[in-house]
Image 1 (cartoon, one colour):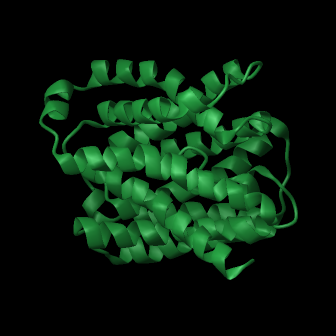
Image 2: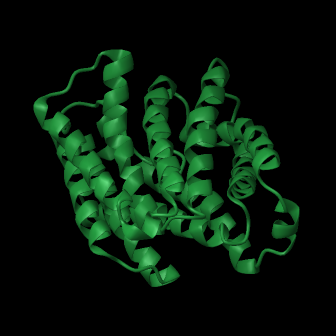
Length: 295
């Protein structure tokens, strides 16, 4: 890869990782379901004027809005109110082994013992991360983050059926379909949403704009301009930087601290995911296609 493209790939990974830190910051003022609803509104308003209707794909995008939108983003934004940025960034890496397991279950796609070992190693790392003492009162939310990762893995399989559709059209219309779902969840499970938004600080609104525009639109615009120029095995390893940036941003920007559960568990998760990614370097399987399509 050209040095400029390597630097650009690293920058995009940092931008995507900043999504979790921004969500954690904004969720301190606005409840999770309401927060992700507003973020989806930003995405829809920003993209719909510039994309066409992907005719013949709308039902697929609707079901994607359930998995990627409500289950992945919704549960993650609720969980991020109660767990640390570094923890969330590490848990979300399990979307890679989840994608492999779902491909085996629904598409009968086989994988070798190397990848099977990578799956086991990844989930062992998750067990260490979830076992950290700070999560003793937040296990439900750590489990939500894990379900969010499972949904993300499944959504990436759904994206295979949308290969001919612009990522911006997918993002924009997925947001349109997801907004009513998330609004309903907010009504059912949250209170004081409007008051929290009315009283939210300028920094929170800037965080929402960052998530909706910089992360979802600019980040993906840069990434999908570069990805076609290289093979999957050259671009996918960069995604392993996301938890590193996520943990670092949690420490620097939000004052989070490290402990041995996060350090050891995180290294184990990244090692397991690396096995899966690098073993798939010559074939475009769901795991190697894995990315941050809607982050």
